[in-house]
Image (cartoon, rainbow, N blue to C red; front, side, top):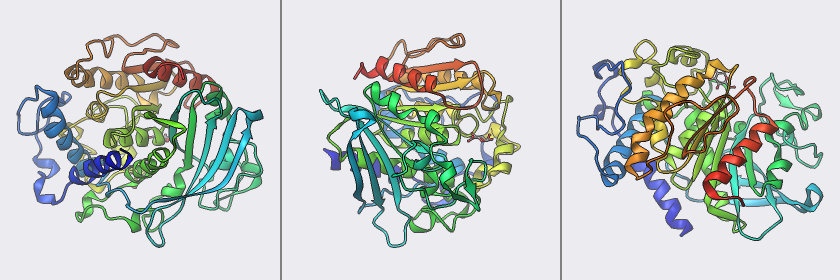
Length: 420
Ligand code: GCU
């Protein structure tokens, strides 16, 4: 079963991937459309009216288009991944959890290792649902535990305790609240996470991280950027979860904040083993419309973060109306699985209203799957969680993840999967 699920995921990534640039019109040849493209109309104008046509034709087409014009082509899943448990402590959080540190080898000489931090609830009436997500500054920042090794790879300067681009003891525990691991354990959920820099350090250079070791497109303009690499890395966490019987493999939740929220949504859109996506305040290039006029623009993101997307995407800086999709199509690729877009009032950079429009525009695809009540047409008030399959939440405050946010993610997951 596990092998079958991995095979399906590999097949989706690989065969949905573009092969020749000639298969795709140049951006300036694409029809300009100011309105959002219809997720249920193929590029050649054919209407999609059945789940079968969605699954076999339109969804693969959209995955190809997203890779070619925006994220770059994701390589196939590695075939020889191995997991080495370096520490296991079954009496964590006062006996409520088991902590594991696991090193992932990607099966290719010289490829970076991924270092996983895992906490699993010890209450084992049934297998636990589990969050998988990348973190911003290393596993040692998520717990105040001197036995968690400091990350040894490049860390952004903006994190406390970074000295000469490396973690120091002063950075231990700085993101405890941003992950609230103990509280999530108390709710009955497991968490598996890894530093995003293990997959690809977040700066414009593809000589490190996974990029040199796995094959993307031959087309230089469609090579995978950092968001695609992170999403591909997140899928390796799913590989690991699938080896663990302590988890319910039908309740795997991809989570991420901001740039890593963009990543979580891409991973869910491309990997059917993921059962729910919770991108938090992900915004432009993830959950907000590229055609949007609020907050970050495509031109701005491509200028500030030239490595996040493939080079083709830069050709849309002044021509977002030529994109043959918008981000509602990325949400729609998750159908019929639940997606929660979480926002904050003071984070207009991530365009919370535009994100709600993406949910509304994705809903015809969910309806095709028979979900009549997937989404309300009015944005819920501040602080009220919309628990449709296409879920939404906006709270007061700024761009961040807080213990209350984690409570709300668990509430949403409870509403869709049942309380663990
Ligand atoms: C910047 C960037 C956003 C991104 C955010 C983050 O603000 O413009 O696109 O989501 O950083 O990752 O924190």
